[in-house]
Structures are given as structure tokens and as C-alpha cells.
Image 1 (tube, rainbow, N blue to C red):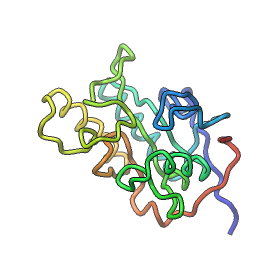
Image 2 (image 1 turned 135 degrees about the vertical axis):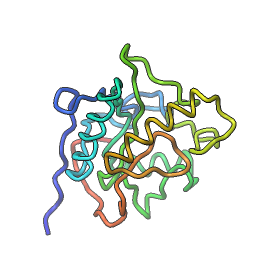
Image 3 (image 1 turned 90 degrees about the vertical axis):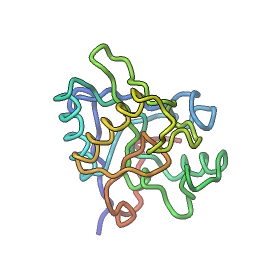
Image 4 (image 1 turned 120 degrees about the vertical axis):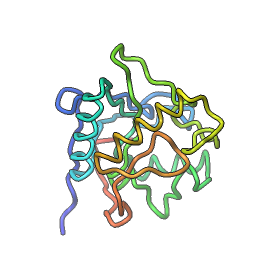
Length: 183
């Protein structure tokens, strides 16, 4: 069986805003990890992202993508910074981002401002977990809105990161080595 080709995600074709945070120094690693970055996903995840973008638009919002496909070398960098499997997958086990079936997102309002989710992206604290009862109702509403959009589009969530969504049975997908994202 041949290598799975990734589908490139563009703002124009997918109706999303792309801000690949790991191509900037403002991230978990504190440095530029992606020297060259293209937003891409496995075709199955791309189809779900396309649906999610449509559902967000119906509700008056736009999806903003922080990360999608991630090379294994990048996963090794993140693991060296934070070797806590609750937040970062052990690269020896493989990341669902490295399978091209996970995406990190938030919602933007009609003015292009990010909704308040209570924490920023990659805030690796319990405050970033779903089902927090100690957050303001507006934050709860925003997280639940994002959750509903993403679940309806075919993704599932993980308990520890409000921004992370992946396909069901993600581990069944093979790891993908692609030069679309250079580390």
C-alpha cells in the first residue's frame, strides 16, 4: 500500500483562517519549529474540516486553524519540551497530528476576533480541559459551540485540550512522512 497523500488546506478553498503557530516562536517550544509550513490533512480529516467550516459559517463564525499535519520530528521537539502524555503524545507512540487526522482550532467572530475560550492555544494546564465548571458562562458557551461544530462534522475531542479535535479511531491511520512541513 502506498503512502497516503495529504490534502492541502487553504483559506480560500476551505473557508478557514490559517495561523500555523509552530511556524512562529510563540508556541509551546518557544521557537520556530516549522521552517516551512503548509496546512494539510489526511483526506478523511480534510472532509470533516470542510464540514466544520461550513457549520461554523452557518452560525456566523469562522474556524481558525492553529495546527494540522505535524511531522514526527516536530513531535519529538514538543515531547522534549513537555513529556506529559496528557498534553503531548509520546513520539514513539505517534501523534494523531503525524497521521494527518488531528487539527487544532478555535472560532473567530464576524469581526475576526477569537472567541474567549478561557485560555490560549497550547496552554498546557488543567484550565484548558473540557468540562471545567469554574470558567465563566461565556467561556463555557464558546467551548461548547466549538465542540458542537466539530463533533457534528465528524471529529471527536480529547479531555485535556479544548482546541484539539481528531478523527475517531485515529490510531488506526498510519503515520505519514511528508515534506510539506519542514522542521
